[in-house]
Amino acid sequence: QAQLVESGGGLVQAGGSLRLSCAASGRTFSSYTMGWFRQAPGKEREFVAAISWSGGSTSYADSVKGRFTISRDNAKNTVYLQLNSLKPEDTAVYYCAADTRTSYGGVKVNGYNYWGQGTQVTVSS
Image 1 (cartoon, one colour):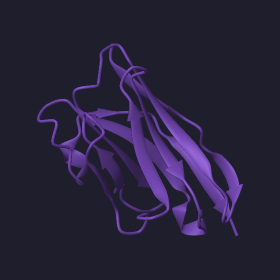
Image 2 (cartoon, helix red, strand yellow):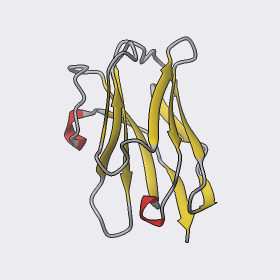
Image 3 (cartoon, one colour):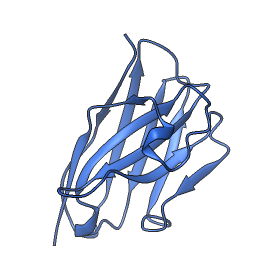
Image 4 (cartoon, one colour):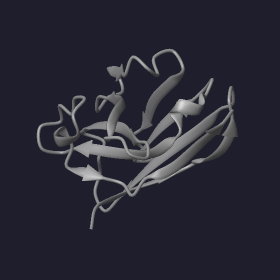
């Protein structure tokens, strides 16, 4: 059964960094757009970043642009999200997602059909 498993979350002080990983298993996701979303308590899940199958195209939410970097290693079937200059408002559960239907992905939750279980990121002030 195909699945995505996130790791790398944790507690960090404001200004700190974390590197999230999303390991895919059960099938290869190297041909598809992958994305990262996050959901804070009481808020809707929101787009963070996406990367094309080749890694040649990336997109970011305005709130994280210049601080977060998405990348992928198709040989390892893994997608990464480097989080730098973290702020308390970045606190959320971060989810990895894949679009295996159209490979477009995009910024909407319904553009992705595979989801991981999430990893908690907490930024203290």
